[in-house]
Image 1 (tube, rainbow, N blue to C red):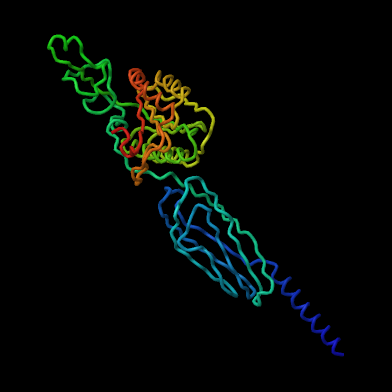
Image 2: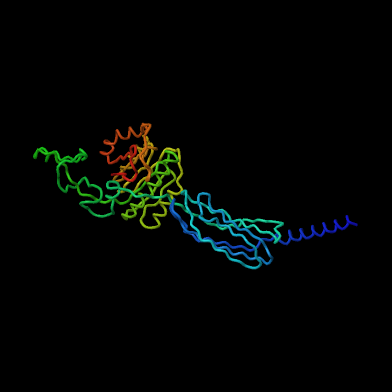
Length: 371
């Protein structure tokens, strides 16, 4: 008799458990909506609001987790738990810290629910398509010679723009650092004082920034930050800007759309070991090349680009020989790569051909590039 009673109770409990399991197989109705900017800069904190609505016709226990991308750190983890019968709304306001550039797809949220006793838990993914564009961080720059002369399209100017070799505004005494090609030999012979020609300046039509990412991951991260900073400076000067790499190039332009294209290209950029291939530049524009190695192939392409570009600038950044913003000077234990030393030896010849060379030597800050 006792055995029969136990069997009846076991059957009753099994029937109850089976009923609960079958009754709660269907998930509650859940809607989740995120409110955040679609794009932001690396290293900043951007606000996010999360709204969740859950409805169930049965008493239910629930847990809703909205997993953020791995490189995004929320101040408060987006998790909602509770018990309900009917409808309930949750709202969470938090800040996100963006630790890495890139285009990040948001993972699906997870909805877990169970009967009031918590005997059987079920889970389902709740797709909420979202994409967060994290642009490289930018930093201030001191650029008296690299960007400030490239103000805008226009006529001849006495102070801004590129020097026009077919014009002559006047003459002045030679100063240390003046290129030999500017010496006015006839006037110098007549006056007995070394004199150089002063030329009018004409503005450029556009700026293209090319990144040679064959220098590795560390260089690439520094290069994209510098490129983003150059883009920002050029946009402030109302100069049409394009960004290029082995992965392609953006269309040159001004305004928000062109800025978004350039920054998105930089956000997606990854190191490549392929030989750099510089695309054709807009005639009359300017080309800035960021590189860690500056090999012969890159220099040859820079010379070819000079056939159409008004000016080509090679910015060599050998890894470990320049300071990021905020870094303190450190001891250098090795010399620059052979390709960089060769580039410095050829800098004078390249300058005569219209290809300027800037090498960030040991403990030189990128903030003073061109200074």
